Image (cartoon, rainbow, N blue to C red; front, side):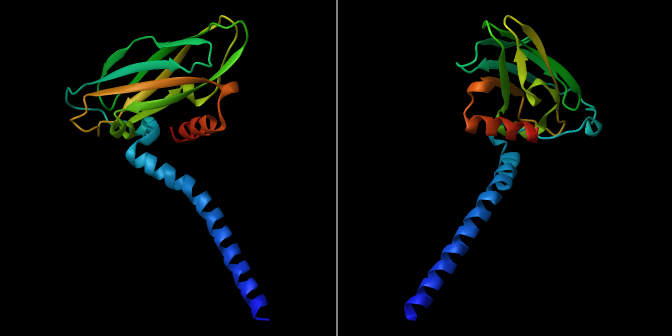
Length: 189
């Protein structure tokens, strides 16, 4: 009799712990997103709608540098059309990257963005970007890949240079962790 009570108690405790662990697992995703949004980890950028753009009255400019790389599994060349531009915070700008499939077969790539320094990423918003969707290039195909962005006028004065960087991965060879990271970043941007 005593043993049955102890077994039931252990079973209830085990079930309660299992339920709490599952709940904690589901809570980690939004918690992770909040932490990344606040700190700028993983290149997550702030969301700034075009309607929210404030015109900057002063002559402040910041330098935005562009960088592009491909994972070794992706047979593409990928680079920015321009390596930098001076921008006025609060105004909308467009930049372009160039990609070429150097393989003799179709390849689908997925770009993963990041902004440096990380504390500036919450002040950098992409309104349109090739990174929002997968990109298919046929053999030898070259493609211009535009990105439209805004650097918030709330950018701290001590930040004078930002770097927008993309790494392209072969969608067919991405690990499940890389696919989840890419999906997560694109949903937040």
